[in-house]
Image (cartoon, rainbow, N blue to C red; front, side):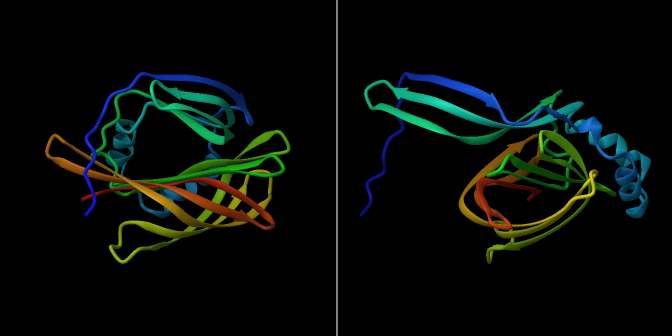
Length: 218
């Protein structure tokens, strides 16, 4: 029989160094032709476009490398170092606004990173993101995503992504989920489920550990 552990509090000290691997990518720098095609193809209503601002008023993404250590008073310290990804949004996020979204990101060997964000708000169904290669962020001009879910139909298991960037390069990326952390957000009469997952991605002969994040209203 497993013993349930009680939560405890401890003093935590972080000593981390952040090194950018790519410039910040502002989502306002999305490929305008690709965005227009998506808006027209899904017969987007103007009223739904206005709801997108309830998710954020501005947003950027950036690939990075973080190194250093974490010290937990009374439990010892842990050294760390590895690639990662950060994003930042402005404004108060309304978790009930999107019907769903998908956020995928990974950093590969050879200085290649990608980010794919798909947001569904009412009749709006658009993707954003970029591929970082050869020192430049290239906005996405095309994307296709297929997801294999667990038997619950909610938790992601595998992903297959085809991307085309504004520089004319195309990529086929596969991903297998390693660890899933569910986040259940309940407020103001709605329930939002976010499944965050460490995901092992493959791009040709390159491998990398990244994130797959799925949001839906339940």
